[in-house]
Amino acid sequence: MNGPEWLTHFRSRQDALAADLEAMVNHESPSRDREALAKLCVWVSQRLSQLGATVEIYPGGTGGDHVLGRFGGRSAGPPALVLGHYDTVWPLGTLESMPFQVAEGRACGPGVHDMKAGLALILAVMAAFREFGHAPARPVWVLITSDEEIGSPGSRPVIESLASQCAMALVLEPALAGGGLKTARKGVGRFRLEITGRAAHAGVEPGAGRSAVVELARQIVALGEIEDRSSGTTLNVGVVAGGTTTNVIPAHAWAEIDARVATTSELERVTRAFDALRPVTSDVAIAVSGGFNRPPMERTPAIAALFEQARILGREIGLELAEGATGGGSDGNFTAALGVPTLDGLGALGGGAHATDEHVVLSSLPERAALLALLIEGLKCP
Image (cartoon, rainbow, N blue to C red):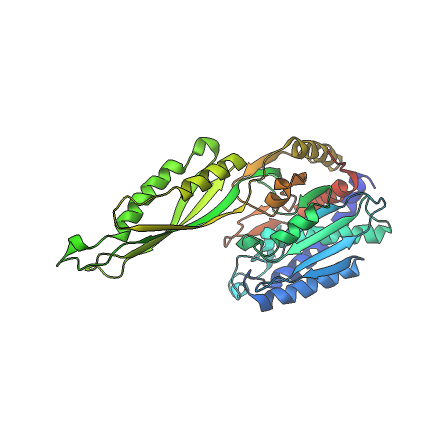
């Protein structure tokens, strides 16, 4: 099928797309709620099976399980890995104050944009192949995980193992504003800085104490020297705490820091800088824990070549695709770091991810489904 034919087909199925989206949004799925995740896992698994996939379940430990649907292709070449996640940042019960609803061409609700609309697109495209009675050009492996919003601690080994066997990775995270694809993402780190000082009475013998809070303040100033915005490296001291009461020299203090880097070399530099932190105050101890949980997705020649193909294919349905970078991470960071050509941001248009105005533009769903179908059929290995 050509581009206009795909687009016509998905426009005729827009209501079905929206129905799948509503069903998934109404299955609330916070990242750490195993019971809630299990219900949506069953729903997704059943749908993939109904569409002809061979379904495998990867246990997710204390969180939800991860679902892999393998679809055969007309050729026996390496598969395309299609990635999505079914967990959300929203706590159970959010639907009571933020129900799924459609108004003025938008669908709203918790997780609708990030990224249950992307899952609806995947299901629609694989349903279309089945309806037309032919397999995709190459095998397609659909992996839907349960822990992306908390850094993919359980699914990362699964993602990397599968990606290493695939020709490319297509990630259904939300599109950039205007519909652009994401060809670069920053690596993401989470560090915890803990200070141990010595308590003393603040009025009777203040000199006997060693303030962990003062030391933490000095370390926060030092962290500013690590940041290098000209290289895309940012640090945010997002949470701080310390002390017990005002008349005690605080013996303990800590901070949690978000780090973002655009390149592997910066990731290594920032990691070394955290390891090199030393106390300014005598008789005070510093402990650094954490690190980078996502490597940067750098725009390699292979990713650039894959995007160029996508740009040409998009024109078949009237899309002039742009590309861009983002400071947020996704599971595409893992696949790209392995050298697997990766296109991210293939999901729906909308906005408000993680916010109360989260929404999807419903008219974008047929276009994005047609684009995904074209990419599965037409992309060649760079």
